[in-house]
Each structure stands twice: as C-alpha cells, then as structure tokens.
Length: 168
Image (cartoon, rainbow, N blue to C red; front, side, top):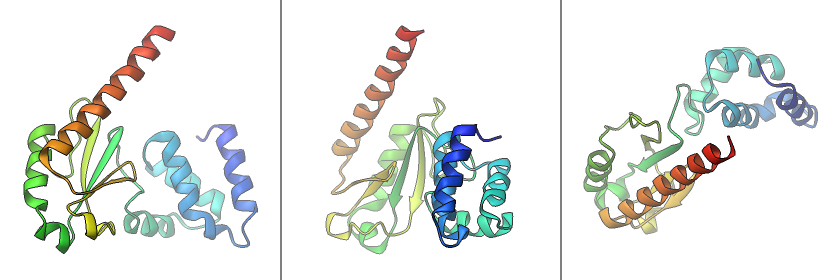
C-alpha cells in the first residue's frame, strides 16, 4: 500500500528511535501527508511498521488534532474555540467562515479546497480570535482579514492547477 520510497523513509525514521512507538505521530503524519488522511488501511500499515496494535494508533489519532481519519480539503481551517476566542468574537468569525465557504463546522467545500474544523486552544490567546490553516496560525481575525486569506489561498490553488495543466 505504501510506496517503496515512503516505506523506506519511515523504516529509517523508526530504526533511529530507541522504541518504535516514539515515532507513532511522526509516522502517521508522514503517511497522512502522502495520502491526505489516515485511512483504515494506512492505519494498519503504520501499526505494522511500528509493531503496535492498530487500536493503540487509533487512540493517538483521535487525541491528536492534526491526524485526520477522513478525507479533508487541501486547506484545513481549524478555528480556535477556546474561552478567550469566544470572548473575542469566535461566533461571528465562525459565522463568517461558514457563510463565505458555504459549509458548516466539520464539513469540506464542494471543490475539496477547504475543511472547517474546531480546535481546542491553539495558544494564540493574546491575538484572539485565531485559527490555523494547515498548521499556520492567523490571529486577530476579522471578516476582512479572513476574506483576504481565503482569496489568497484560492488564487494559490488556481495557479497550481494552471501550472499542472500547462505541464500536461
């Protein structure tokens, strides 16, 4: 299931650890980076590589916010729903994101570009409300700032598609 190059890379990463399970998150993240999410088959493969039970990996994956067990969009938006973000306008920011993307929390846009998820405190309280997009932090959010960010990401995705079409 895993491409040989990825399998070899992961085996090297695991072999450098004193205990294979030390590398569980890193292995899942690398597999996810390749496939876009951790499917059941990917979870089984990771468990074999790490000599762990699949249920042990599942427990980690459900705890760790950056491991996705279902397909997600190219850009994963994780909006902080901590108490500080709530106090500083989380609800209006969430409403704007949902309206702008035409999705609800937990959904992916029809073009597969954006997934909107909640995130427990992301540690940006001094710049709340905040969100992560593919693990990059954006703070002091306003509707206008969000629009600029989304427009830039859409443009970036479109230019990549244009470049790929030109190369074909």
